[in-house]
Length: 312
View 1: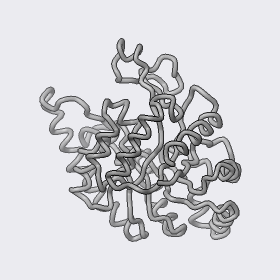
View 2: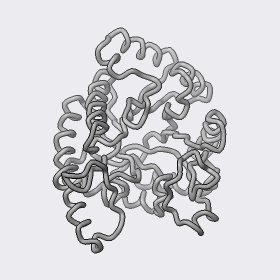
View 3: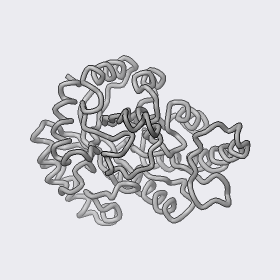
View 4: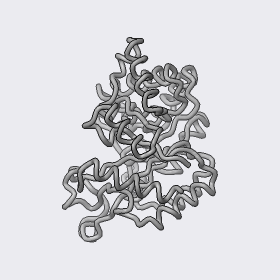
């Protein structure tokens, strides 16, 4: 496995500054955000699609630092019923177009989350038993069978037309696909082009064990984010893992994204990656750093150092 870097983690820097910083640490592969939840700080999607000189400039910059794009990331909610969903669907299809121009074969994104009925205006993440209230069962079936599966069947055909070979869905909360079971449900209903972008941090706050999840996902892991998470036990003991506070309110949250090693020690990470190798994944681990307890550069430097020790 090799280390890559998700550039949004240093969004305040220019792309050239990011490339200079990571290549100084012997990292020559990146995952590049194109839009969706990402503000796409390092590219202008429409400009790259419509201006050949801009595309050439990007390629020249990457060549200057000998850096390769291993994935484009357009994570968002393409199933949102409003303007946001329209925007994210547009970004997704344009990301496929850009991937073709750049020769990138892998797209990282999220499954999306629809509303609970055709009359709703807000996405609805159903996470409790559908036995009570029983209307939740109908809502969940609507989300999957009437919205998600039809959309994804059309979307993968568009992806294939642009040469995309893998669509790696992040197991993020507030998405229809958030674990191995839901990934299999969508993949089996749609197409094997769909696999998992395995991010252990999200599994941890949802109460799962990423090591055991990796065993379940043998052959289905298409990409990985290297990101740690710390459970704040005092808060959890009082308030549960269900968390609605702002992500920056680290002192009062039940859990926080942290630099690698600040949530789980390096032995845990070594075991995790050992199992990842065992189930056949030998591709890139893309560092994503969202630790709001320290400056971004510090978190990136700490995480790179830790991941290099683990992956050797």
